[in-house]
Image (cartoon, rainbow, N blue to C red; front, side, top):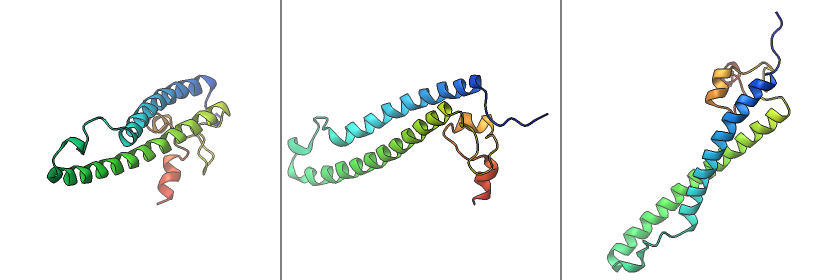
Length: 125
């Protein structure tokens, strides 16, 4: 029996559906993070006494920094998912870039943007 070299079109369609769902959720999360950085929700330090203003500004700055980091991470995740969709269209999705073998379905269901098999990932350490 010959070893599979790529996933079937039906399998690729299944992964595409999974990725599109994750992509939609990731884009929603990214927008939430981005809005928390750029928009004021109206509960600003303008209406508080000067004593609390300094403390609130520090907390707001920290919160914006954290939201910025989360937004960057989410954007990177979105880019990885979009690249996975391109690999699906090219029918190269699920092929390990190191070994050339198929990445296990279980791994792709958990991490659909993976480009390395567990074997290749473990050998990198």
